[in-house]
Length: 175
Ligand SMILES: [Zn+2]
Picture 1 (cartoon, rainbow, N blue to C red):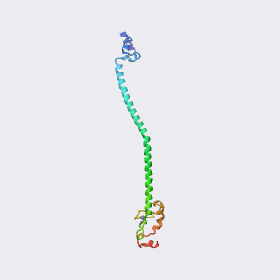
Picture 2: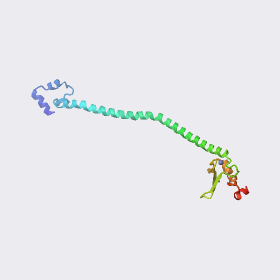
Picture 3: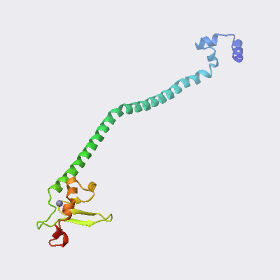
């Protein structure tokens, strides 16, 4: 300040430089008229530009996020509906699957024309004897959960007694 004041004093135009620059209120700030205006002018053009570019980027980024947030709610119910539909379809398909297996078991005699059993029996590693009908593939098991229906489970003991070969063994005689 002191330096500047001296310079003005020398030219005897204490207020003249300030008035000429039109910097009345900013007189003190615009003291270094030669250097500062050019710098501040560049700053006023570059800084706000960068600022706006950044602001725009931030704005666009936040808008993107907002748009995504806006889009989310309609997406989730659709997804949920789709998942529910898929679940229902799967359950229906499973129900249909078990029903068809049950019906197939019901509609099969599990026997051949010569009255022998078409069920291929085998004792498995757990000691249980299970058999699959060679006509309808129904599994006969002493375990209820392994049978497609209560009916199949209930028939296990009965079909076990039916011989699988004509004139074969004690089972035929006993039945
Ligand atoms: Zn069968």
